[in-house]
Length: 418
Image (cartoon, rainbow, N blue to C red):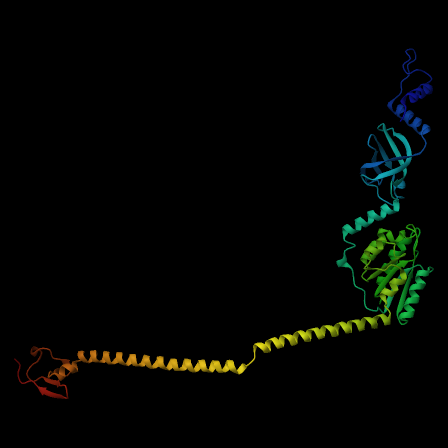
């Protein structure tokens, strides 16, 4: 805790007079007071480590980090300038418990007490691990790890690109595997630094170069094992985005089987070691032959199963179709019965129609003029014109008429009428 009383005594010593001496009163401006407090703080307090939790974290266009460092009882404003913040492996964030190294001073323009931070470490976990988790979370949210975008490897590629150190044992192990299995395969090596300053940029550029090299069908990006710091180049964002942008399938083979890097998550395929990457891309001929034999056995079993199933289905159908001719004979018999019944129905219909016709003919005959004529009557027609004569008044002496009898006709001339 800062003690203000010694500070006041220091101020008195600086001006050699009590501030409130009545005879020779001397005044300080606000700026002078703040500068005096600032100088006292900086001279009395050395650089120190402060433990706390970050809140109200913000980054203005200047790139400086401004935040509040607090615990459960107190808080203090803090600033970390861009030059110091650029050296951090992780990005500070709200709620993060940290250890800050710096000096306490006064921002005299506003009179604010601030902690000027030169270095920062996450409390309870390493800075590299935190940076790894932050970048992993960021890239996962952008979809760089999505399975649906990963490209399949070509079968036995003719040209393989390798991004690795040309001085490491990892490259020699990969070349040995390739030569032993398929000596005719073409290998394009793009040597890079795999650790240290600038290594990540070289790896990213190498991946882009192999994408422009004609004929390369698969790319191995890797190195041998090491500490987290040694493998850090493969955890850089620039390498992750270069792998994501590659049009050629990329196999990540960094470190040992227990090592995982950001490159492993972004790559289309991950191999536990560089040697395993070469074995993965170019499997042994013996292994391929064994796979063919296994597939052949599976195919034969599948064919046998399908044939047996088809045979069972055929037998079931044959049982249902014991005598095809019986159904035909039954249908023929049924057709005969239907034909006889149809003929009987037709004859009955004809008989009823004939009887009805006879009845109608009799009734029509009874109403026919011919029947009247047969009872002794005759019909007279005046000629010409054939007009029926209904009254003697319609005739004159000398008119020619035709008389129709039940049997035959006669033509007569009227002599007189009554």
